[in-house]
Length: 141
Image 1 (cartoon, rainbow, N blue to C red):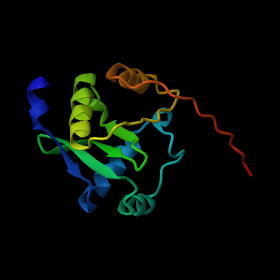
Image 2: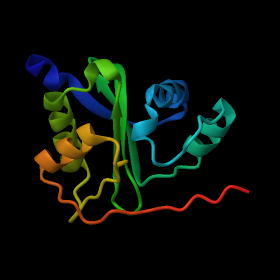
Image 3: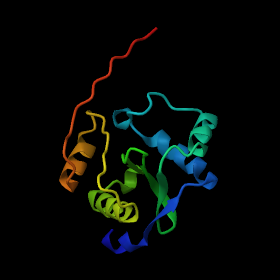
């Protein structure tokens, strides 16, 4: 894997990435989702992506093949997801370093579902510190 790290690049999201991003979204397990509870339709997904919801949003490419996506929200929150077969710490560290170098900020945040222990450990090991726990009350009508 180390020899391929220099073959990773971040490409800004475009219309050509809608299908890949949708397929990537389908791979996400419920315990990593905090932004939605059910899978959107393709039309809803396209509308969301085309609305330019983030300050920066990239498809992560390895040897020119898309393997994941990473974004920076307008509140400096990082969202990061790789295809399962590429979700390895050495690769994630390299991608996060590349992303931060490309998008310098004075601070970054990540919001992680409390059930997602693996991501919590990754970001803590990277140097992020826990700031708060947020609770939500669901009212079902």
